[in-house]
Length: 606
Image 1: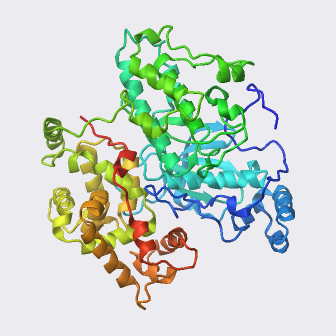
Image 2: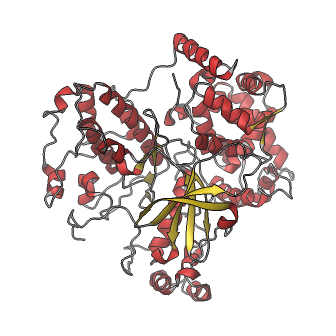
Image 3: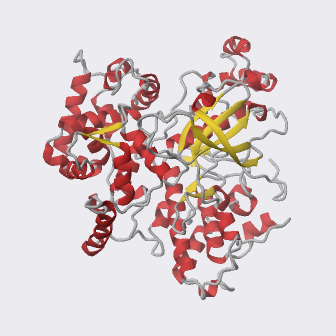
């Protein structure tokens, strides 16, 4: 494949220009990522790849071809290459209104479009207002946006898979606060609608461009601000790579500020060009934005380190206000060979530690380039030490004043990290941990129970979601309303708009510590849950057995969605692929490693 000149390379967008027939060197339907847009096999704390192979090779892409043609494609199963060619051709000749993403078609019944926020190659973005808030969220006024992608822009099967995959990845990353929160996807005959959190602070590039030329000697806080931004950026890159997601288009334009405040957190968006990647696997197509492109991308063989090069470009720009390489027809040559300038102004006013991190991220040897985890441990970005008693006392006093008696940053400042960790688990994991919580001795739940009593000041066995949102926001943590709502939707397992004591404790227990320091008690409770579900006592759980863990009544409006998720989660847990899970599978599913909280930002406000 010939190199694409930097001036012709495009940013990450769907390829809509024309139909292009592509045949992989070794076509295997099982290499295609699961592109479902509903939470399924997502788990943040397990290094195993999250997108298991599809058991129906063409099922993923049937929606991209006319319904009447699908039977013919099934008959070509013995001839994979011919089937692939036929599928590409069929998707090209399928009309936009015939595309099916298997998404709900009630967008206009749930939302009203507001003002237009922007327009790009992919489509348009609007403010969106819920027509009727559900009971669990009616008290929380959300800033929501919708990305509207016309089906006419989906001109090939590759486009179809990319659009579905964008939603899939946002769901997988739903646990972290550093990704724009995804509320759901819908479709009708003409469009696909992606509803997500609206970040009102704009993108990082626009905010940086709106400022005067940087002068670190005149504004020493500039470096501290860059440090704050890079922690957010590297955290989300680390989280992506843990899930085997390579973003491929990291740039300031794709990081949005949650609000207009100076200390607003950054959130990553635009996963349209991202890819799932196995360990040891490489990608070969040139993709991304030229000024942020890594040298190995230009050589057509790259993997996860390429995202860290882009992080280095971002840090260079945050500190100096410019790019490390001048754009133009020789950009590719400069990226691969030109020495990086860390000496000329304004670099004279930047600390040596900051410059060292820049050089270690913009390292052309991928074996020497830092990973996201290593970068976060760099002395310039090293995570703050555990909260001191003095710091906790200061924060607690401020929080008590704001909340009229509620204590300050709870659980030694890990409350928001615990919420993120819990939200990153899949539906089956959360349902099982909810049952384990019921069985745990009270002594092992003491911290979470004390916190529950603080939130539920009237002594009730349940707390309202607005009540808990107010506690989190005023108790020493930086959370937007949209972020609070995203957490609360996951905590409220039975969908009744209230948090029970067990739902609350399940989300806020220190599961890594409990599994390591009280392993016997945890395993005993997990075994009790397994035995409770295993009614025939054969030591194996089927999907029907696991469905008994559903927290909803048979008539519950959330039952169908939960069981769809459960099917995908079960396939992920069934490591042997035999259609059932044993106790080892069950305990493996629940395993949360020590240090899992470090993947997530603390979001403490002082």
